[in-house]
Image (cartoon, rainbow, N blue to C red; front, side):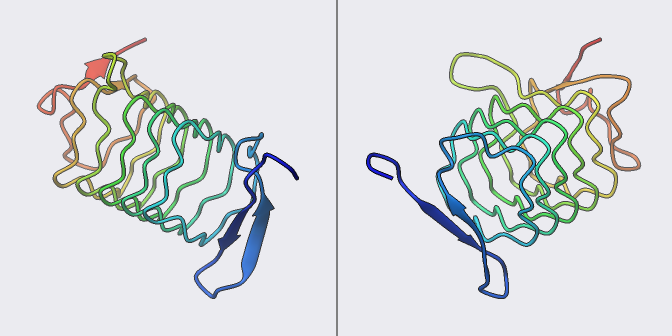
Length: 153
């Protein structure tokens, strides 16, 4: 494919699970246990993708689209998620420690409307300015107002 970078993604066992361009529509992919830690994936569309137990530790996911993606038990520690569309994504038991879900460089909010964060680890995460709604499910005892999140309809 001239002019297009081919990306090879392996799982935790070292098995190739995806080969192709991440510049195209990567929605609805099965990327369970994918090793994506530390990669620059700004603006990539993972809408509806299965990223269960994926390693995204330290990945740059700025302006990424994860609408309805499954990130159950994914490791997103230290990931950059500013301005990302995380609406209706499932982060059950995901590690979001020290992740940045704050505003992007132009003041836009990370969108968590309808997201499921039950059991997610959020210690040290920046959520200031991130949007949520009545359908967003937070971990037990979590206070979005205390972290300066914005409630939207």
